[in-house]
Picture 1 (tube, rainbow, N blue to C red):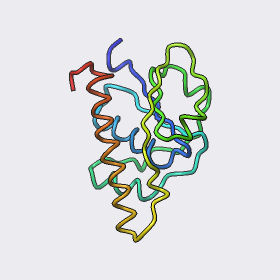
Picture 2 (picture 1 turned 180 degrees about the vertical axis):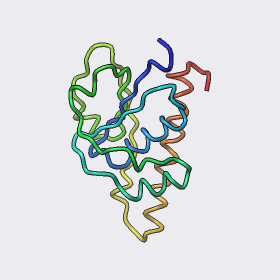
Picture 3 (picture 1 turned 90 degrees about the vertical axis):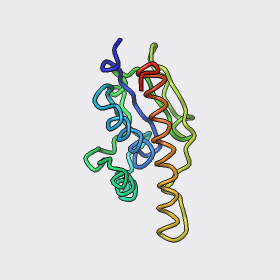
Amino acid sequence: MTASDRSVLFLCTGNSCRSQMAEGYLRHLGKGQVQALSAGIEAHGKNPRAIAIMAEDGVDISGQESTRLGDDMLQGVDLVVTVCGHADEHCPVLPSGIRRLHWPLPDPAKATGSEEEILQQFRSVRDDVRRRVRTLLAEEIRGGQA
């Protein structure tokens, strides 16, 4: 299986922040070599702060949709990455052949404080997601060829 045949689904509670960031980074850093998808146990809509802080890093996620996980989304997926504890606990039983990873990322949408303090928490999660996606590409997708 080549890298371009690979498909990764990022799963979160509401598909509004963390999974959206991960999908955006995999699309951006993977340069079309892997299909990136995201979904939520529920669909909470896109978070404007997530869109803004991703744009700061040159990644446009404004066209991505907040979607609820459906059985059809698992068709052809090679890897499911849960990005929060709730999604990890409520992830459906995956069909045979689909691997699963868990990234325990804090929810920036629950950040409190001034607007700048909240944005700093979003940036911190964004930077962690970018690092994890780079590692995923290097170790899981390209087999060390990143």
